[in-house]
Image (cartoon, rainbow, N blue to C red; front, side, top):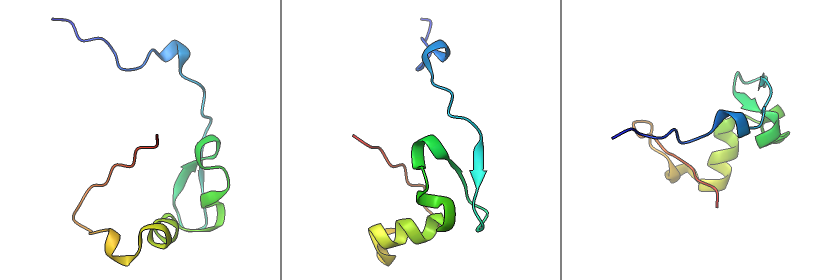
Length: 65
């Protein structure tokens, strides 16, 4: 059985370069816009999910519907 690629690269938009904020976090402007330009990623997510929302030894995957 041949597995088909999940994305057809010919239709994938160019997201441009990664930007880096003063905290050393890298982000894509077309996706995050200025959300992470001055705030650290941890500040944004801790503010949204709260201090008990994360554990250091876990991997979290966020999907947007």
